Length: 359
Ligand code: AHM
Ligand code: MG
Image 1 (spheres, rainbow, N blue to C red):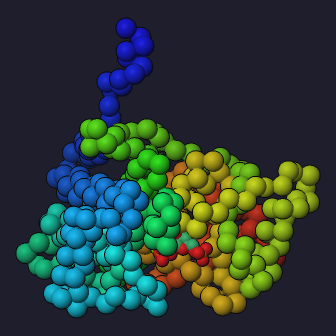
Image 2: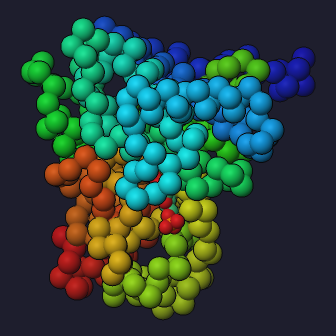
Image 3: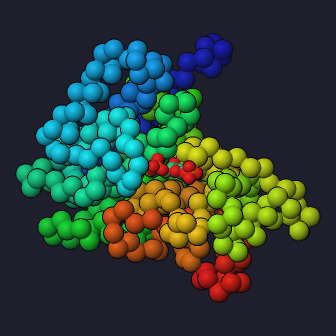
């Protein structure tokens, strides 16, 4: 009956099936990418479950969950001497747990050679017996300052391939973002959503907790050509440069007769970019006088999100060039970013070009 068919979808396209379908278009493929991705998916499910538990139970009531996390955290400190502070910020326990989960899942996939995580100062070179042809750059839990109030946070990842079978070296990850093979993020919000691009469009999958599977819910995402939203931390406005200040002013007081844009800013890149991808508009984290390189990290924040935005028909710009053309010199390098709907990014590019800054 029709109403039964509506209530229970029976044509489920899981992320595993989706990737296998993609793989079947390349008969030479040996399934390495599917194995790598299934390990990333496992990490996302684990972190999703941990995030939900932390939100349900404040730390003093976390009982076994908290005990387990403390064990992992302390072990990592003891065995690996991992620092409790990185880049001058307090490291949250869930950041550490998420990092461990992803590092272990990626190493045990047997398909990776180099891992770069926001949580680890140095790149991780996988031991030779477990190496594979991929390098993964990731932020295991981005936006973690939002954990305690239950606001959406997420994991961001990008994948490079070592092309000619040489021994893995750091240059394999210090490549422009346009060389990425795939990129994605998983948002831990009101639902758990994994958005992925393997270089031919963008697809979104939502975790069905009863099945434990990510189901294709947002096929072939296309960002609107022009949007009605701008997203920026306006608290930094007094330190912005001329083009950024002028652009934001125009969002509020348009000079071309178009309506003013709405401001939406969550302060969690995954959530702000997810909204921008679906609804259009612009997300910016510009340079300012205090942070001349901006805040967001090139390899595991700027590149994966720019890759997805371009694949969805939008653009991403650094204030000087196309974001994906940037050649990083250090694994934790930062860059300003202006990304979103094609026409909106064109406007900010024109303002920087008028100052002789963009190209
Ligand atoms: P994090 O990697 O330490 O979590 O910081 C990155 C986050 C992004 O998710 C978000 O876009 C940005 O920081 C928000 O910064 P601000 O609080 O300065 O607006
Ligand atoms: Mg981050």
